Length: 69
Image 1 (cartoon, rainbow, N blue to C red):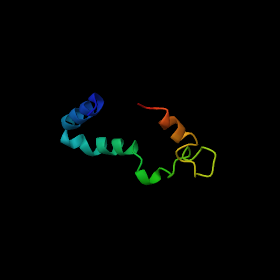
Image 2 (image 1 turned 90 degrees about the vertical axis):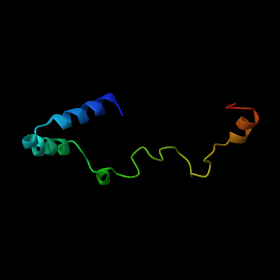
Image 3 (image 1 turned 45 degrees about the vertical axis):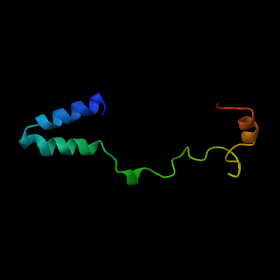
Image 4 (image 1 turned 135 degrees about the horizontal axis):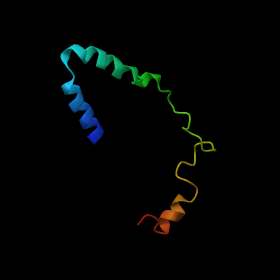
């Protein structure tokens, strides 16, 4: 857990009970449901091609030369 998230959790525990609903409403204003995020994202599939060369044309050649070892 990041230090910012830990601080947020600590601060949430310190909110007086009578102010919880107002703080919760404010937090909800900053959240966006996952369903509002388009899928696939705009950048998805930006590479040109027909999708058949997933591994690349030279993959076997590069692996044969020891690439990545």
